[in-house]
Length: 370
Ligand code: NDP
Ligand code: PMR
Image (cartoon, rainbow, N blue to C red; front, side, top):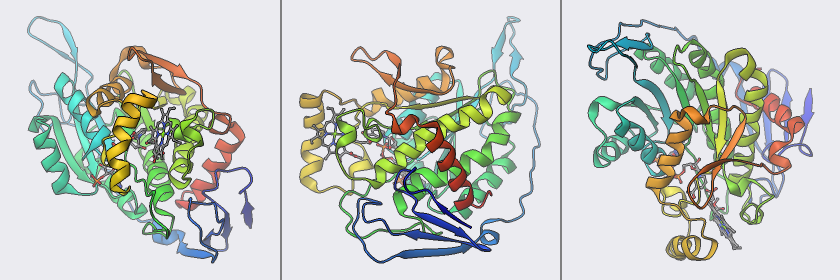
C-alpha cells in the first residue's frame, strides 16, 4: 500500500510504502530546504521500533517537603492552618538544557510549585545549565532523551514511568534548525533531522505519554507543543525560507490541533501551542553563519520589534504551563506588545484539519504506532 500525500502535507513526507517495512523516500528537491536529486531511502522494520515495556506505577504518599525522589499522587495536601494547597506539579520539558526550555524551567522552578523533568540529550550540559541558571536541586530531575532516536523516546518513557512520578504537563520544546546545511542529515531511523527531531520524536513522545497525562490527578493537565510564527505563512516571517525547520513547526501546530480534536473532550487535557516571540539569542541559531548571529538580534530588536529575551520567553511558556487563565484547549498563544497573551490565528495551512489528520496518520506509521 502506498500513501501518496505529498500534495496535502507539508513537504516533510513524500511517500510511504508498507510491505512489512516502511520505505521512507525523501525525494522532493524542496523537501527540506535542501537540494538532492537521488532518492534517499531509510528502511526500518516496525519490530525494530517496538520493545516490551514494563509499566511501573508505584505512587508514594505526599510528604510535607518534596524531594527529587518524592512521588505525589494526591493533589491536595493539608497544612497546619487547615488550608488545602496544591501539590507540586510535575512537568516534562524537552530540550531544557538551553534557550527557551531552560528559561521556562527556571521560571517554573522559581514559583516553588513545580518539579521539572529536564528531558535532554546531553546530561552533563543539562546539569551545568540547571546549576548556572540557579535552579534548586530539589526542583528538577534530568532524564536522558534524544528525540532523534525513536528507541531513545521509548526508553525515556520507560525510565520516566519507573521513576514513579506523575505527569501533569508535557512541554514539547526541543528543536534543531540547520539553515546552512547543503546535505541532509538523518535521525537514527533515517528521517531528515529537523522533521525527525522537532516533529516525529515529539509525536511519538506525546502519543506514549498521553496515557500518563490521563492518569494525572492534577487539576489542569496540559500538553504544549512549541510552534512558531515562521511556520505560519499568514505572516511576513513565515514567508522567509528555509523549509525543513518550518515544515516541522507546521507539523507541530497541526498535531496540537489534532490532539485537541481527538482527546480533549474525552480526557479534559488542554492542548496548546505558542509563539513566544523572537528569542534571537538562543542556541537555535548556532548553525547559522557568524554574520547572521551578529545581526539577527539587533534586526529583531530594532527593525521587526519581534525580539524577546530568553527570560521573557520563558515566562510566557511558563504561563501556558501553569496559568489558570490559559486552560482553553486547541489555542495557539501569542503575546502583544504589552506582553499580554492572546489567542492568535494560525495560517490556513497550519489550521487545515484535513492536513492535520493526514499528518497524524502518516506520522503514526512512521513512528511505528500504526
Ligand atoms: P535552543 O537551541 O536554545 O534549544 C533547543 C533545545 O533542543 C536544546 O536544549 C537542545 O539540546 C534540544 N535538542 C536539540 N536536538 C535534540 C534532540 N535530538 N533530543 C533532545 N533535545 C534536543 O533553541 P530555542 O530555545 O530557541 O528553541 C526552543 C523552541 O522554541 C524550539 O521549539 C523552537 O522552534 C522554538 N522557537 C524559537 C524561537 C526563537 O526565536 N529562538 C522562535 C519561535 C519558536 P542541546 O542543548 O543538547 O543542544
Ligand atoms: Mg524573520 C516582520 C516580522 C518578523 C518577525 C517577527 C520575524 C521572526 N521575522 C520577521 C521578518 C523578517 N525576517 C524579515 C523582513 C526578514 C528579511 C527577509 C527576515 C529574515 C529572517 C531570517 C533569514 N528571519 C528569520 C531568519 C531565520 O533564519 C530565522 C528562522 O526562520 O529560523 C527558523 C528567522 C526568524 N524570524 C523570526 C523568528 C521568530 C525567527 C526564528 C524562527 C523560529 O524560531 O521559528
